[in-house]
Length: 174
Image (cartoon, rainbow, N blue to C red):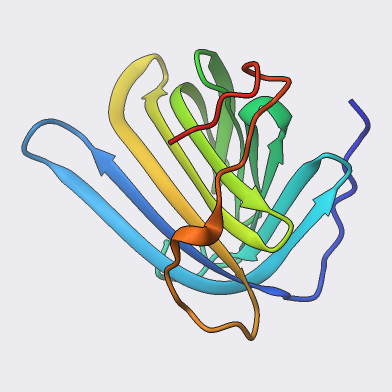
């Protein structure tokens, strides 16, 4: 694959993120964040970037999410927190998380990815399990919605489905 160039871009998008963690049947956490960021197409991939805030506990960190064909998602954080994770359905991948000189090995077991991104924005849903140092910590998911900066917030059914031809014979995700 051709290398992706990550440059600090002007904010051109409004990015809404909802993350959920389920520790057991009775215990869960959720977080929601809406922020300005950048969204662009690079080759046949999409690149989402935004600055974390105190709301997420990651203030001083820049998050970049690369959405590749066949739904391989790479999340990279640089700043006060350093993190690199890969989400690919049906694949377990190891990543690293570093904060204040503490380094942990994270294992991601991605269950499903629903990619409805297009050149103007759209949405991305990722469902996965998280292990830290080989111990199951939580079941998680996040939903990212992206719209062009300056466009009104509205829900439409015309967002359309993004086909994954080449990945699964052209079937679409629901």
